[in-house]
Image: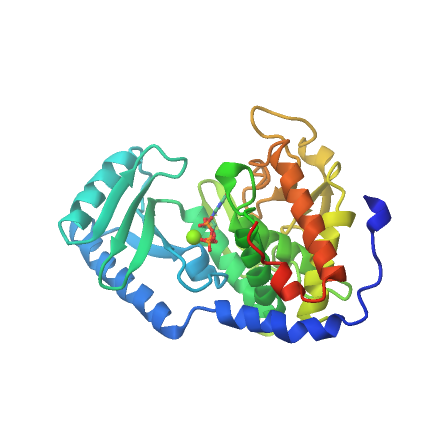
Length: 335
Ligand code: GTP
Ligand code: MG
């Protein structure tokens, strides 16, 4: 594998910039779509408020972290001030309320890993998932959104990587491949590692925002408007970064020993986290540390079969970016 490690980019790499940027632009949700999401949230807020006046609704996931492409489903968290021991009871009640307000396809999935109510709003055509008290997801959504404000190249890279992952069938945790959340963390970590760095490590800086959620302290520097020139001494373009990202995951990353960590802005050793062996179903074949729940490896879903699929896809993408005359087409070919 290491033989293919390439240090020099293809000579015509700059030619790939405008087609890749055009794909990025085409994936950005139009303003009307954002307005419809707010409209749906306001409707749900009204319904929830009647039943639970002290509860609040928060958007999280890709509709709020700025990594959402056009026509994504939206993720909503129903948050209570107190601990909820029986989420099923709340979700069934919620499903009842929504059903009687003409929302469609209302379904309570009370046994899922993250229990939710699903629904479709016929007025806006938007589908959404509502979970209860998943406040950590609301906070990690905020962290991702703050990173995206620092340098536009993060959003460009992540859109292209997510679009590639969906097109190539490697964005499905139930099949042992990675979540969108994991891919965005890989992009952030990658940009923290460029020299000069394109992104800082917000959790390594002075704390300006802090909350404790489920006994986890979530703290970081969130005055990101002061950091909008952070990456300007690095002039790499999106084509160079997409090339280098896939080259890294295909031929450079040390899968046997390394954990990527956005929290520290660096690589850490698997040994340090005791992620060197399989425990229950967690195999740690690709290690991506959650920025707040540091015992949580977003790569835990990857098994000995899917790791091969994933690495073969990284290699394919790296080779396409290196040799293909039209990578902006070949990269996203359906598998
Ligand atoms: P798309 O829906 O694919 O566009 O992306 P998404 O960012 O919405 O991803 P997804 O629907 O898979 O997850 C929604 C949100 O849940 C993520 O943005 C995270 O905030 C959170 N999340 C997902 N997986 C995990 C996880 O394993 N741990 C934690 N703590 N949060 C997660
Ligand atoms: Mg989502």
